[in-house]
Length: 90
Image (cartoon, rainbow, N blue to C red; front, side, top):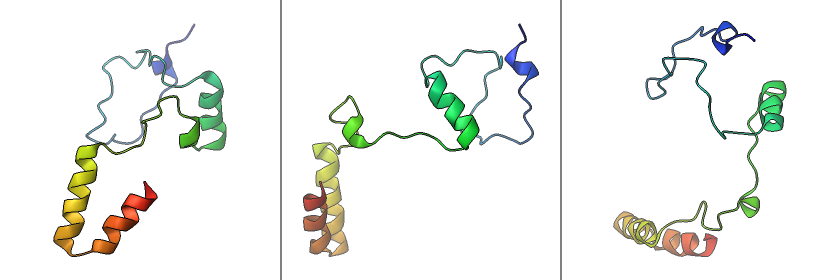
């Protein structure tokens, strides 16, 4: 069996915020299943499921603190319409 590092050719500098592991054979555990990985390679597009299909019902929601901070920010900007618009959207 070949090492993954034999197949990986790094031909560009990665983003500084993305540190590559010292060992390119490091296993990425539970990142995505094989079907989604194959689709990523074949389609050159990342699969993202709809928010209604996520297991965590709070995924993608704002905390109360974030909501209050947004409302304060819109008030400071003098845009009361956006406060109500954001409230309806949530």
